[in-house]
Image (cartoon, rainbow, N blue to C red; front, side, top):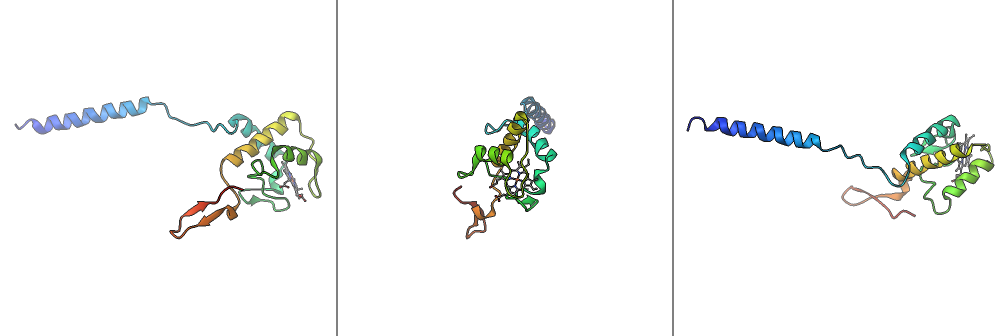
Length: 140
Ligand code: HEC
């Protein structure tokens, strides 16, 4: 009768070890976002930095304020990828034209696709409901 607690203790120790072991056997699941190519997007971030787009444009409302926020430009139904490509090539008003190589242009687009996939930058798309919870409006 006296030896009972030790069995309980041992049982718990062994359960703990088995459980921990099985947890660490599982590979860490980092889900790839299918909406963009991660490697190309990180190359695109370097292009974004090299040409200093941030000095005039914002991502998530942070950056320069000469040009508009570009976080969600890819999914904007009135703009989108082709529009961005054209703007960069042609330049407009205070924005100079950028003569990017094809792979630079493609990875820059992929970078903008990744910022687009990561969330919404426009605060007007959010409402605070009566419970104080922030809800996203229908994306227009
Ligand atoms: C010298 C400042 C400046 C720099 C640097 C700059 N832009 Fe611009 N960009 C502007 C301005 C200003 C506009 C808005 C022109 C207008 O619509 O009248 C603009 C517009 C745009 C637009 C169209 C946005 C829209 O919603 O109409 C895109 C896309 C864009 N820029 C991409 C880029 C990218 C990518 C880079 C970096 C390679 C870049 N810009 C660098 C100033 C700049």
